[in-house]
Image 1 (cartoon, rainbow over the protein chains, first blue to last red):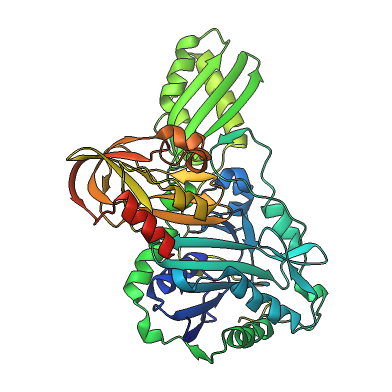
Image 2 (image 1 turned 135 degrees about the vertical axis):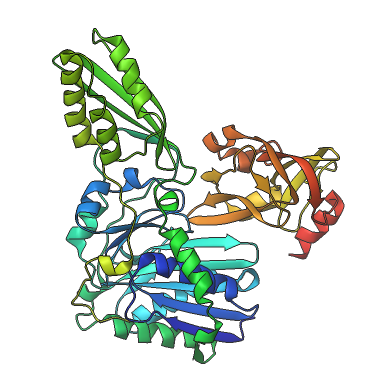
Length: 354
Length: 125
């Protein structure tokens, strides 16, 4: 039975999704046997994908990169979501024996209902208002440790949300979990005076009410900054964000003046593991050398173009083919950059922090 | 609920079939798949990876929930059931056929239960 309720509010200077994921993991494994830790946190503009999703399949990666929107992969399952500071995230960190999804969801419902908002629960563990979703939930368990986390949309930029969660219609064949589309709504539509700090206070009160315990502040001395920093680096690493062991196939084709080209790139952990190239072009030797060139490169526009441009020698005809293919791939492929420290991202303004 | 006699079971709901003293095949139990619900994805290690008794070696995803799968033994991954990745529903349909990995050079094992002991363990809740 839960006998200790701790609240952890993310300090206002953060908003870094990788640090938040690292903290969430840390809190999950530090929860005492009869403790419930409620962690409230926010991210600057970020698309957060489920553990087993393919970022290229879920979102227009190149637009996100251009607009400095981060991509993060969480530990829990399910689909892609968009966060900005109009969104408040919650995580319940508890041991397995105290994990009670309906009780945890009732905390969120009570908090939202106390603001006069007519929210209810639906079958897919979503919370909705008049059939429109404002909170998505997902889960993680490792041994005795569990978390249940979710989003609460108070005042999210819906135009950006739709744009960032609409992938380019490319032919990607991938294993992994697909997102389920939902109609969504911001709670501010039902409660114009709603702010993130107000929502945070209501969540604390509801949590204290549901568990019948006073909410204590989580003691910062319990944190291990080195461990959290190491986990932050892990969540921000390109191996984790772009791939892990989630192979996918990118098929592209185009008709050029000199022939049809069909390219199949097999990508895993962000690298081209294999490449198949078919063409009815006269110069089959060239086509084979093209496939050989691509194999082993990172799945990254800059790297691929640089490597092809270095093919420079050869006949005039071959140089023309290379030029055509480079121009084509430059449209079809995306540059992948590794996330920098949070300071390098443009901060959002306008919303108060929790 | 089905718990074959010839298998050994861990507290974290994995089954183990020892092919000889140092070779073990691992999967998740009928009880585990029933608790997890419809499985839609599995992450498996690669051949040659090391696994450690009591530590995560794979994970499975059911509806929006990721659960780590612990290795009951320490050793080296000798074979991976790649077909499972294409048909994750097999973990629900036939959990004892749907093996995850075969481990060689098994050097250490958790305290494992017999079928009878495991049945009693799951009934305790």
